[in-house]
Image (cartoon, rainbow, N blue to C red; front, side, top):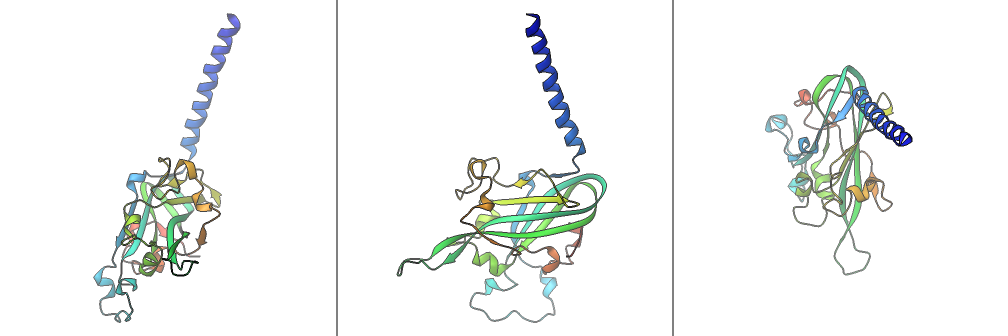
Length: 234
């Protein structure tokens, strides 16, 4: 009986030790992502005032593919506890589908799974409970990678596609990852979720690096400069 009591005490102390270590780790963690519900991912148009007085858009087959079309804007929430964080880099992975010719002659076009990526880096980030890290997908790319379904671009705005964001702080990876479908067994498309956590590294995926643009490479800059911490250009 005595040995059982000692064993029980040891297990309890061990549990408290683990809980304490986890709590201390949380306290030490500077950067944390916000909740999935706080994600802002929408199809938006460039404000009229941005193009006022400028040259007209080119004559193209689909006017929605010009810069005047709708951009996919992705703003992921995060917080920091340090008074200032010298540098934070975010890498975004977005699920998409490019329409390509069917290898079998005479049949309908098919979809090719692609992972659209891009980075946003910020410097001297002040302590704050809700910052945003943001990237943009240009109008022509929105149409190109929305798949074969009519209005397929709405699947991004409805959070039906996978989105993953990784962060590094001063070059060191942040353990926490933002994963839009992480609470589901599988994402709506059949990819992602608990059963496919590494969907963005899938062997059948083609990664298109730089498809997602930081704000300073878009018409939203500098009008929306207050939205984000100070961007750092390469």
